[in-house]
Image (cartoon, rainbow, N blue to C red):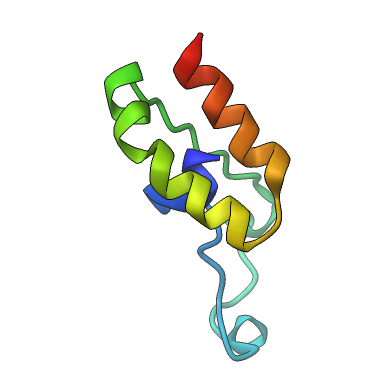
Length: 73
């Protein structure tokens, strides 16, 4: 949830259909890129209210609940 909403590691996609001409086909085209975000408890506690607000606005309540449970564990 932090990767989706706060850290910016996810959802970095070409806009305006520019992906069709942005770059040539290359070996990286066939590789899967995985982003790993590590957040300490103190950091998660600081961003949890922002994640909650965004998940409520998008009506993705389970995402907000996942962060809330991690903070209270």
